[in-house]
Image (cartoon, rainbow, N blue to C red; front, top):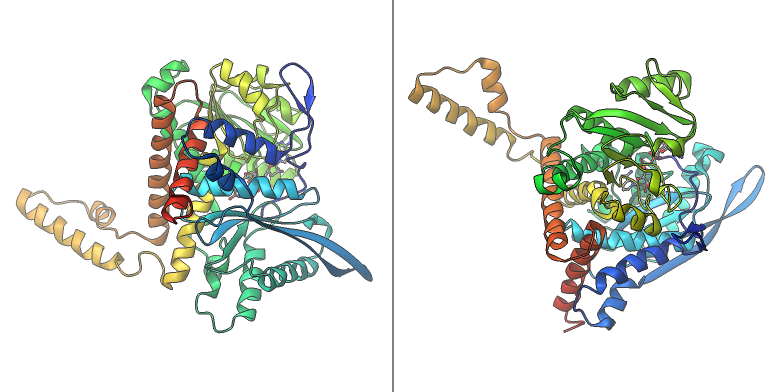
Length: 488
Ligand code: NAD
């Protein structure tokens, strides 16, 4: 389950390069990036205004029984763009959440889905609670009541709006949502497709849990394969031997670190909220997680040096920095001290726009959140498809593929006179499992999207990858609106 309790995205004092502070909200930051990118497109201003605006904002309250009394809980669901339906986006349980944050995250979902060709509009939901302060029974009541309110206002449904997990929510909450929705729609054969990120036993899909971190790995790997770009950073192409620091060992950070380590990166630094650890020889991610479980802290890991302040970890010597915890971590204040040459944004909004200006001048390559953490929604899309098809991915073709491959191997053996070892035969003649198909679909998506963005980046002078990602997303959403005939 994703943890919550992180600081709010918005209404933070953002230190500008001149040293003054601006009170730009999260949604304003997203809009700023949108406007920057929109100026490189030729779409009419009315169309751009329509894309940028949040279409539907539903803010509601409901009472729940707590400690012998009642508490009124605030909640939101924002559907940013209905140019494609259903809309899609996670539900966040956080004490610090507010409407601006939900709007910003919903907008990012629209652009993220467009970028990776997931045919959904963007949405986001939130309940203003700290789940750590509630019992499981209370959380269940909150989740079911939240879902009932969404049903009442037509803000949920397989073809309307499909939530997923975010901070403070996970598979458990998604199962409660699916069950509540089904209770309101007992006749709906597709009811389970009203939410994604469910447990596999409740209509979830294998590979969803790791999807965002795996996507982060695929995205960084793809960026590292372009020799020309790596040369500009003073790096060799490929991931092998590259040093990595990861902030946040939650769902995204843990899986990203694990897959990067498996690809022969050296994880030199890991940071959690209690501090960080550093070892230039490399840290074994699973051993660190085990150590944290046993001792309740990442600090004191055998052979590693403790770095007491978590923010200092961002400034450690490394090739690739993956902030995968929370927003606004790299600001104009610390951007000048970042040593990484590549920043892979696992979290949403970890680099502020002011910090980005500093980093750009220092030629740091930022692989933007909107693209890099799109693995979760991509695999949620696969889960939704699985639910609508009512069949596990690969079920129909697995054995057929295995039989055909086995036949092909026999034919090749006969023709060449070379016999393969039984294990090799087994490996070559394996039909794809659901997880194989999910991971391969995700890999393909991340590779294609990166190269689409990179092409825009390379052919548009003076822009960065983030602006290129926004341009790509804006163009795709604009095309949808034009095809709908709304903006001829
Ligand atoms: P999570 O709660 O599973 O993990 C976050 C981790 O960061 C926790 O272990 C927490 O202890 C740690 N952390 C908190 N403060 C920290 C600090 N100051 N320094 C270092 N570590 C700190 O959450 P998650 O699902 O991994 O999400 C992380 C980020 O990725 C968020 O910005 C989220 O919106 C984004 N994201 C998540 C998904 C997904 O599928 N889970 C998808 C897209 C984007």
